[in-house]
Image (cartoon, rainbow, N blue to C red; front, side, top):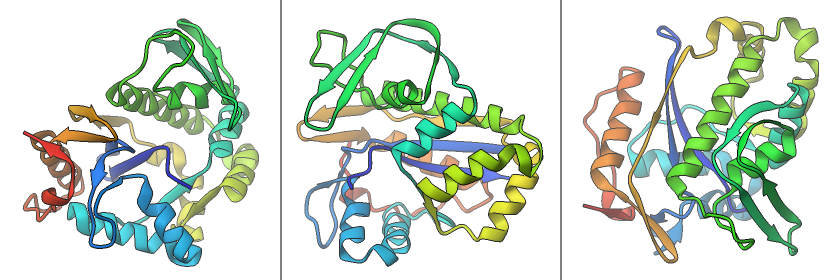
Length: 253
């Protein structure tokens, strides 16, 4: 249940621009009920308490922590990414380095070669998940991993933007129905799909933060986090005055 990827997206439909912040899953976050936990702990915590309220409670937690009003939350499982990429005919990815990692316990077997190539859904999932190696290849930082995730999202959006009409969206809609959970109203989802080509962001800015791994947690530069949160707010015209609870987040000067 621990979340593998956490992203905050701020989208302005008037300018068709978006800003995207990837939060390290191992970022230290403290709360009144969990003194020292990783960022990916909280959705699982709320889900195990009551899965019917997991989304609103997780959304409220992060909204209050970051002083960032979150309208909607989307939970995507691994098969959603795999199947969506396959339905779109794969992605052309320039893999930055050889990536190898094997875990017999959960069946993970990442084996990617450096270079430009077409990756299928399973390979794309391996590409965005890769961080450490036990097979002799270079390891990846959280910063690099976040960049890969953002690159994949941009390419998926481009391919989705080329689809026209509900008929071409049929397979994608089936995947969404089976593998995506969200509190976005169904009417808004349908409207978004029908008008996707005109709503798709034509400009996506990735917001980056300097981070440090200090086992077992990740710490981010407070100035970078503060700048990123201001940028997310500015994108949709919110005040840049913030009450972010930095003392509850693992930050460094």
